Image 1 (cartoon, rainbow, N blue to C red):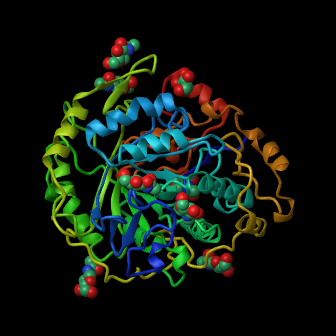
Image 2: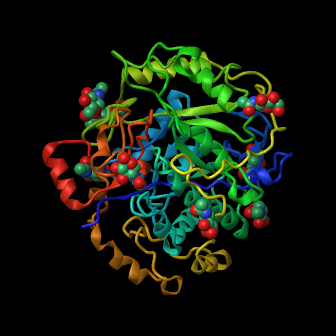
Length: 479
Ligand SMILES: *[C@@H]1O[C@H](CO)[C@@H](O)[C@H](O)[C@H]1NC(C)=O
Ligand SMILES: *[C@@H]1O[C@H](CO)[C@@H](O)[C@H](O)[C@H]1NC(C)=O
Ligand SMILES: *[C@@H]1O[C@H](CO)[C@@H](O)[C@H](O)[C@H]1NC(C)=O
Ligand SMILES: *[C@@H]1O[C@H](CO)[C@@H](O)[C@H](O)[C@H]1NC(C)=O
Ligand SMILES: *[C@@H]1O[C@H](CO)[C@@H](O)[C@H](O)[C@H]1NC(C)=O
Ligand SMILES: *[C@@H]1O[C@H](CO)[C@@H](O)[C@H](O)[C@H]1NC(C)=O
Ligand SMILES: *[C@@H]1O[C@H](CO)[C@@H](O)[C@H](O)[C@H]1NC(C)=O
Ligand SMILES: *[C@@H]1O[C@H](CO)[C@@H](O)[C@H](O)[C@H]1NC(C)=O
């Protein structure tokens, strides 16, 4: 039996950066009347393309069902229709969704979000279709790219897509840095695809785990090199360092300001909200994040997470029949912080004069990512001409489709999924989760105690063979 394949999500960002100066207007008819005109990038900040005002992400991570139960909250209007009014009440302008089913219709939910002035950051991976930590080279294949491109096709038309994440915490330890090469290749392919299909220039980014040994190397690597297509457009950091009544200095935020000071593209907190607190989270970090203490480098962030799931990070509790939500004390605290804190005036110290980063050298044991990216699998180039075609949804695993390019077809895909459970919801019983690191380390060689935080998103899940799932269910563990 093969020991777990590890899955990540990939994000895609488009190449706003190749036009270093101007904020470009959307190519589409997004203009004027939309409550969510396209967000564009200039230098290290986001801007509203209608008003040219700086845009700060005030968001939540939106993953009802948790990482253990794959659901697409944007395909079911009963779900998003329940939650969008709550988002509005909370005062947010962005949600991050970790996985969607690209074969479903998202128009109603996307409209509800847009009407409420809310943008979407979307991870393009699914638990079974992602770069694998155990065999990144194999998992980077034409079938996988077809799935990613089909997700882009499904969302590119919406002006309120702020950006795509090509991957989430694919590097989640000291010894998974070699995966970065493949994630960066995916970034490149996504950006080229968006251009080839004449879509709006939608940013493509990466969401990084906060790992002391390689967080700076990751930031540099994904934003380095002469090939603008291969560089991310935005960088998300999952950072749980501010716990309770902390401060700019004590939390480590000040250190991060120094670390990323000269970064040339937007950075934001793609997950934050440490729950290692005595009672409720006070969310006083909001006062720091949306102040000039941080606005010259950071463009806001997303609180982990909307609904209360097994890892206990919820702002609201979804009632058992799924019709209503109950707002928890964390919700009220966050809402009052948002209401109290306005964005810095003007451009908040944004800067567009930094150059992209210098590529870190390959270093055994420290940074094992090659600056020569693999070529895109040849079979994937057909999609650039004609589009990705029929979306495959979430049922097909692409992780082991590393057969010869010439054999690419869906039939061989389905057969490759036999190692996994056929039910999509049972596959990802795991969250790599919890800042405590216990979760997956025994199973999957991919977590490491050196990480100071880890994603709670489904995108960071492990794919666990059925027998382990059964075991873990029996034991009631996180696994
Ligand atoms: C914009 O809208 C006009 C009028 O509705 C339409 O003719 C045109 O094709 C649209 N352009 C794009 C890029 O969608
Ligand atoms: C924009 O709003 C104006 C005034 O409300 C309206 O006349 C116009 O048709 C709208 N345009 C679009 C594209 O919705
Ligand atoms: C997963 O989510 C579905 C739909 O939201 C729900 O019906 C099902 O009970 C959930 N399964 C588990 C194991 O929580
Ligand atoms: C940022 O850039 C300035 C000017 O180029 C340089 O002096 C400084 O050392 C850089 N800081 C970091 C943290 O790289
Ligand atoms: C959130 O879920 C966790 C795990 O089920 C539970 O322990 C906790 O009590 C829940 N929180 C609230 C406020 O319901
Ligand atoms: C859900 O909320 C609505 C509106 O507040 C209320 O009328 C309804 O009774 C609630 N339903 C349940 C099952 O609690
Ligand atoms: C980097 O990639 C190139 C091309 O795939 C390969 O020839 C080279 O050996 C790799 N270098 C390292 C250090 O892995
Ligand atoms: C990373 O290191 C851990 C702990 O030493 C090990 O169990 C695991 O196999 C390694 N993972 C990879 C992908 O090499």
